Amino acid sequence: MSKLTIRFVTDYVCPYCIAAKIPLMKAAETRDVEIQWLPYELTTTDKEPVDTWHDEVRKAKWAAGLLPFCEEQGLNVHIPPHVVPRPYTHLAFMGYHYACDHGKGEAYNTRMYELYFGEEKDIGDMKVLRAEAEALGMDGADFENEVLSGKYEARQKEADRYAKEELHVRGVPSIWIGETKVLNALMSAEEYGALIDEIIAGQDAEQADGGAVCGPDGCGEPVFGCGPDGCK
Image (cartoon, rainbow, N blue to C red):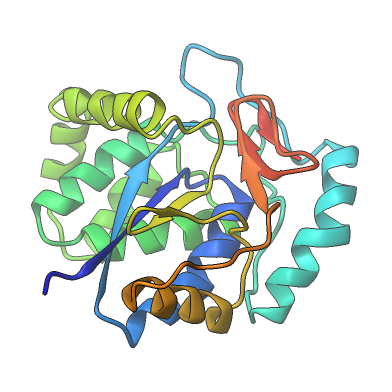
């Protein structure tokens, strides 16, 4: 029997993504599943960058709902990080494709969230990305050359097309466990584990609607999360 595949559509600067990622990964550790990380750039480089640090409305919403959830999950994160403006993630995703080609995709992916939300570093800066590639054991000069060469542009474009046209993603995190769409990404590891077990067992999984996503226009109610214009 093949492993159950979990598709996690994400952007490294989406706070709801890191909040969902950690409990999901804890649940996955003890189960026969494979997680596929699918890139989705909230702000493409042809758009004006977003400033989340000076957005008091957004800060208040996160403080009221998202930060308490993160604390419950044991996450030590800065939401929002003091990085102005919010970084474009195009280069970071190019680096992810490079890391995957060199057997470091999972470690690199994890570090991008940690660098931004934990260490408040600008992950749109090649110097930051190169230093992390070297810390993970990759050749820094080769990493920078390959990422900036455009080698991975077609792969990133296809990832974006797949998310938008085939999965019909309009915000992140968007998560599928097998063929079941997760309706509320902000769950504990226990809740994710129970859902995964139900799906593995072939049962109809009951879920509470709602949850958190960020789309191009922000992250807001009634479905929270991140979109192209921000996270509310």
